[in-house]
Image (tube, rainbow, N blue to C red; front, side):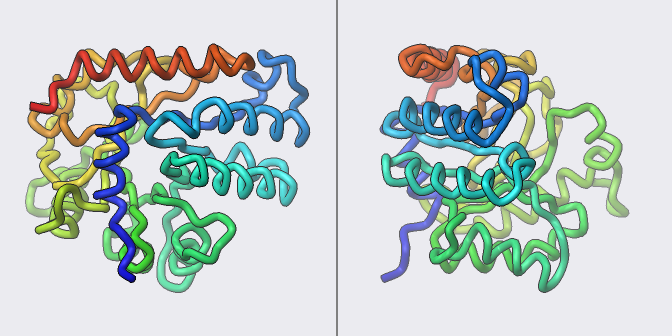
Length: 279
């Protein structure tokens, strides 16, 4: 059977569970604030609490791979379990790995996150296109086969990103727009939503690019980075219907109590619903 594409599954998840992606970012300082040690036991307790509190109700969970990798193989084992249990509870998992390379190396990254038999198989993975959009082809092809998605960095919320992403290509378009146009081509004809998404920061003000890529728009920056759900229409304009806001510390700081995590997530879902009309 042909797997259901990620874009269709994400649209359904957003429509039924509300539009919110919660990052699982076990910073050392956050573990400490939860009363946990900055070690594998603390990492496991933190991650299990977030998954048990949220995986059965939010649309997307987004573990940041680096915070697990720093503990070596034992940290990766915690990540594998989190991915498996989150997906089993009905949440879509976006692996925030921001991988970018060429040829067989990109192919190996694709096998890691986008092959259905991998222990780290996720519903989608974040990737960097700034070795050229064509360098992503192994990931794009693997995602299409497995029914997974790919979120491509376009305009990120960190200020340093502008020196690359806002630079002009030979034809006058910004490099970010070049990448967005490639994404639109990948998503052409897909319904109800393409599976190649863009990462566009919610803190940008007017994004100043054409975001009509017929794919999801992952929008970090809500909460601790200063953006609010009310900012989304101004940043994303007519494409706001396809936005998936991403919140990490704004939810996670309400732990370790599971009810605090759930209440914080529900507040963000309600605020996004109030700010953004699906029309």
